[in-house]
Image (tube, rainbow, N blue to C red; front, side, top):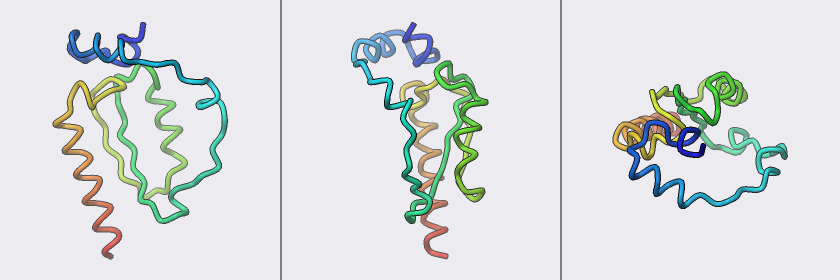
Length: 108
């Protein structure tokens, strides 16, 4: 089940290693509401949507991102929940773009 939910587009050998490394996570980490709003503390925000995410459907991702300021960086990848395993180069390029946007905003 974990392979499908988290690593649907990851090579089997790598996905198997990732599944073997998973540890239990307390449910309260997703159940408890956080009051921290980083955008009110000087942080630039961004969200990378993962279109084929079986863990967090795109509608829920959109809802999560909607609380960010309208000027937040966004990008969309055609990946599962773990683009850092399935498409690390593409994800790295997107993260570099996000960093450049943040630096440009801070300099303005």
